[in-house]
Amino acid sequence: MNEKVMPVTRILEDSFVYSCSFDQTRGYEQFLPHHVLSIQISGETQIQHQNGLLILKENQILLSGKNQLAKTKKIPAKDKAYTSISVILTDTALRKFALEANIVVSKKYTGEQMLLLQSDALLKSYFQSLLPYVEESRTINQKLAVLKTNEAIELLLNLDPSLVTFLFDFSEPHKIDLEKFMLQNYHYNVPIAQFAKLSGRSLAAFKRDFNHIFQISPRKWLQDKRLQEAYQLIQQGKRKPAEIYLEVGFENLSHFYNSFKQKFGVTPANL
Image (cartoon, rainbow, N blue to C red; front, side, top):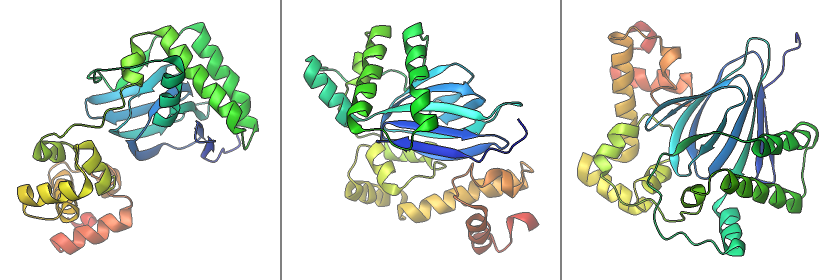
């Protein structure tokens, strides 16, 4: 394939996501608010999450848990476009399914949040059935989107009935040690409100507890912490600024350069 394929992300009725890029690696900062069922059709996805690195390879299927932080790199194959299909399983869809199927889960899910599935022929055929929608259609009617989402849920429960706790735990994140949580996750570039949610707090409670612990506002602390790590990576690790600005939690290189110079009096390149 000689023609360059531009990166594409297509969302249909808040249910199906189709993404593709051909000749470049793309990175994304992510907060995952919903469960996501994904298949890697070609290329690979590297996912850095709170418990380590997961590499999703061709034909593998992943079930990702909601309310977690992740950094992804989408890497094309040597001779193929990067291609994946994801089905977003929202709480709204799952609650409706549980109600109609009389499913009640009384205990909180405490297992892994990234599950590589040993898929069967039914699940693989399901993803094949989605290809015409994501490749040829710009829209899909809502009724059909609901049917395909419910089909995914049915197939997951058929594959592994124990996934019922994973899928239908609707409890909110519990309140956790805020200092430990922030020191582990400051390099994720997500809004303050998402940090608050994941720590089991309202935004107001998060800001109050944060100021009590760190004696500084969350926004200022995050920028200082990210810049300090960047300084160490460049000076001691001999890393290049363009290699690390996303890694430490900045959205773009220009903002990183300006913030770095303002704090240290020198640009990252001149350090």
